[in-house]
Length: 465
Ligand code: SF4
Image (cartoon, rainbow, N blue to C red; front, top):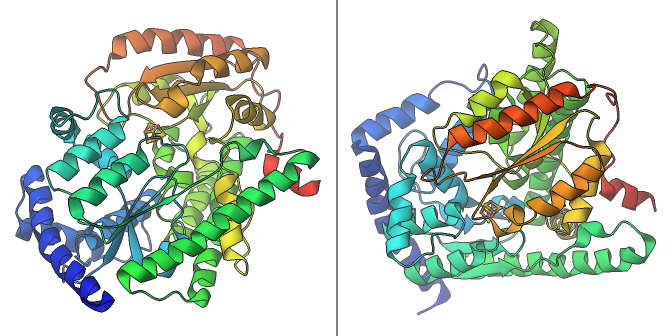
């Protein structure tokens, strides 16, 4: 069989499988295909102008989701090449090669929003997935076993941050008989802010840039799509524009001291792990977000002076009382997942630029380094709530060390042992008591003394050396 024949066979198999998987997905929601088509059309028939940033974002993600099942927004069928990706795998090369990313962890979060996560996790647990495995992955594993996700053309994951994602991709790769690619990221590169670390950083950048080039070859080999540099350059420019608006919005809302939005909703952007980097539409989403902040600051009544919180990691995606309760008493003024920690990328040097952004991910370095980074830009008087899933090896295990570092830096810190997806252990009454005590402590502190401090990203410090 020639390479072309093999690719044609994959497309043929995927087309048939995705039609079944889409029906499986709809049956979970208890709706038929016709009703689903009507809903999809109605969501996409208005122009985007006039939508809020959050609506634009929701629409973009919904469109990407249905395209993975070969459905267009007007409900015609069109084959879409799909790469399953893990949360921190960059997406620019995929968009440049017309590959749609499908982030299984995001789909798991969506199941939790719909209240459909528990059955998926139970399916996974009945099939020997450990209960203490990250619940994003457990939910996705259940969905794979139940055949709910669209069969991928390829799977691409990275080794950084989420310990189980490459293993999970290995499992799905065997089930669907599709090839996988794992990007290997050296650990702890963000710590390199001193002269003697320059070589180490540059070696890491080179090492990962070479793997991005391999990824291009892998995509062409398995999908038949050719790479065009010009297209990647365009995608990188969109990423840079999106970065600018996201960063400007973050800084406006945090440093101007005008929290004009519900911070718990803002966590939904989860910008630094999102699959939308490299699309033109996300530029508009982040620009609209910034404009909403400015308009809100000009037109809204000032909010009561409440304690301000910087939020660590993600939030519970299932129906919960926690986020609403916190926001009755405090303001979630910023969060870890929206932080823009990288500089503009060079579209003329795309592989090295992407590699630099990837290896300089501050979450993937010693706890002391990333905690110190936080202390550099936080406004005095603000506190941190770290909502860490107990099943997250990476973040949950670091909370004790963080707590000691922040105590020394006089930054109030509360770690909540929670879960973003699995609500079987949710105990609001217990958490509420701890939150009350924490917010009371924040209120006692003198607030606002450090307003106007500017962020000092380690990457920029490094660049000046
Ligand atoms: S909980 Fe931890 S392992 Fe799971 S998706 Fe989040 S960072 Fe990754």
